[in-house]
Length: 228
Image (cartoon, rainbow, N blue to C red; front, top):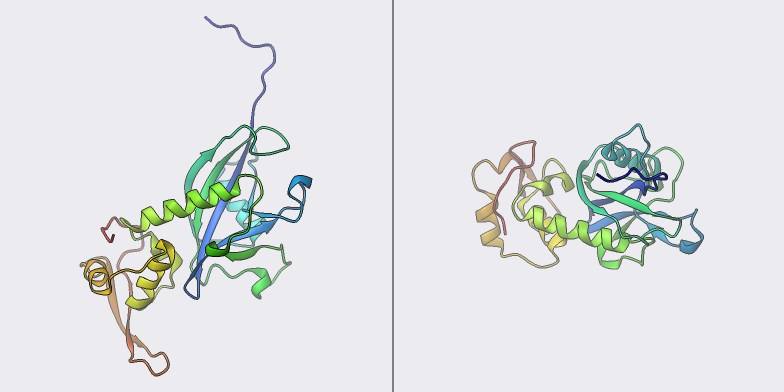
């Protein structure tokens, strides 16, 4: 039997959140200014913080999104545990990271007109991401890869869209996340499988274009499908 060490040393446990939205057809990620670490002065990173002893990792993720991003609601799932020894210059910190998705009505920041103090949080296009603090470049990329994988076999994209949308808007959402174009006929054949999306009976008119049928997802939860 092994002996109990006289002095135990533990890593600090934290959480970081890769939060996404779609804005005018562009996939964006939420970034905050890093102000308390000299090594990252002037840089931005993902919303994050230490996990309180009395809260779960998920509760901590929800809290930092509210405190540092001013966001509530949305969809949240655990992403990955990042435990590189030197990921934080202040000491040994392990991060339980989360993927968060926000629909247009949930994603508006204080800096974009919401009431309350501006935390400095900003949405940034994934296609024009600056170099991030800590290992947040890696976390953001892992989150994007998870999102790309998940939209191929589930309806998780619903959490980035308004409740009602056209099939063109839905396809553009997929293309923005994936980074490439999809065949219109094949996409509509797969997405219109019974039980996935349903027509609302309402139409949307945009400029000189013909009115387009509005759809919504048939179920509230994330369902397993085959799109890609």
